[in-house]
Picture: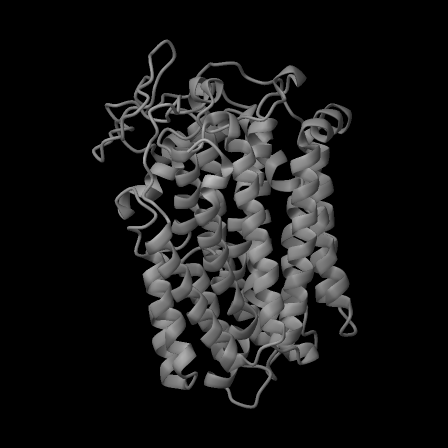
Length: 499
């Protein structure tokens, strides 16, 4: 597949899939409330159930879809700023020789795409996630009464624990398998733009549909996505002329000085680790650098605040300002457009903007800037005094752009190349832990302060507590003093197989 036009069927499939998934997000809060607490704008049971569902799959629906549309932008920014030397500031591509030599088997010892492909038999067409999505959407398309809602809730929770996020990862792998390395950056950018446009279009469509029609259209589009994929999207076939694969023919990451296989599909029996990195390894890694420990604290409280906001915000706005799916859709359209603008600016300016700003301000300061506007964003929600304030707060999402890539870049410079996988995995693990406990903490708090049992009248108190968590991350980021980058030394004993 030599040209990007060969990916048209993939782009259409992903657009339809994301469009279907996004449509139900603004409406699900109303459906949950009407099924569990008819005629009320506050329902503790609905908040508890939503919080448990988000904790069980680590990320809520809205956050997951947003991550899917920005995954590649964050990845490209991380790789762009992985080195402090401005001479290294260039766009790295998955499959690029230099990328593979330094990071494959080290940053991500096992390809993130390959790990997602394996349960789906290495094929987007064979993955069961789109099929299951139709079943879930059809439940509420048929009826939204209490019993049908519980059926939807159980099915959604169990299935999301197994296959949440599989489709975007498979799409990334499909692009990597079928596009020459020189064109992959452009293909990844287009795929991210398709996901962002589906997010905006899906929410905009929900704004003009009834609740019943929303789920019916969502189910219909999901069916159309599956049918289109089965008929038009070919299986991913590795082209013999595509160079620099991620894994060698023996299923091991290629090492320095070793040749690549050009047309071999990796074996399923991939042995990447001698053993999984232990908790002791992670603690040793964090103790090796004060900067790394500070970044871990930032990652924890940032994720705690981000997921806590998603766990509480819609129920807070419904109770406080009687918002319904139409207002929720308006907010998400604003957020989606702001996110698309920021992503587009980054895609166009990352080769110019980051090399200029990073040396001038420092990545720690850019991280602090992003976290500062995160605090403003959350606190505005918590003290909203009239219905238009949440719309203003939503616009601040365009200013969050530097937080994640700068944090990951800071982490990458504190360890040698052989420890990159551990370092990034450690930060991801800390973030995932925060993602689990955040809904369990903030959902009960939200339920309490939206009920008549609140110790004092402050409906936005739980949102303000989320703001305090983001403020801790912001204050900690101000204390970060970045040490000189480490070259290739290991800071602790590693469990990785030597490449």
